[in-house]
Image (cartoon, rainbow, N blue to C red):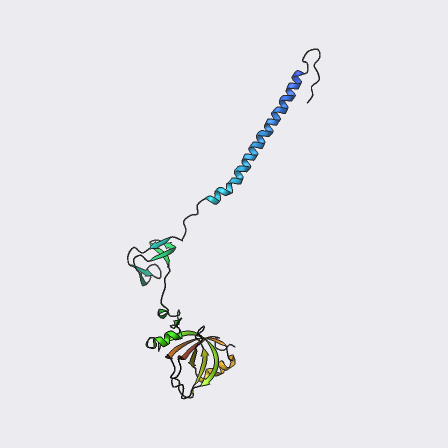
Length: 233
């Protein structure tokens, strides 16, 4: 900004220069205040998400609890009791309803004590376990996965199978490398013939013998062919 030199009368232009200088100074100060205010607001806005992320999460259903005493376990509130929790048994809270707490428990059960849901058959039983404890398993139903090797007819060497009756020579129960004889009805023979050798089967069967007369091969009586389903190839 340039102000012309003053001439007579003295300082004739001075008020005008002062007014102009004051206007420029005031405008600059206003811009600085506006810039400061805008920058502060931007900094506050940028900090806001960090504050929200840092807020603690509310309590959820991951709480763990322990049985303070022997406590009955129910299938649902006011429903039938089916087990008892021992003192100190722990579980995870997955729901609440009034005075009831829905807990999820973790634990281990012996294979021999298990049955498949709704099927009444033992799951996870090995052929070795059957041979080791025949009194425990003979007469019990098991669910086994087998690999079909051949369809054969019983002879005098297979005294555990009625002479002349068909049976399956299978490998298993998978993934075991041994063999299992499966007694089947004559009307099912065409079904197994259509599958061909090396087909994998899931069967529910009753253990007739822990081993055959001359070999360590369990003999089972087919109750249900689970997979492949009857009538499918």
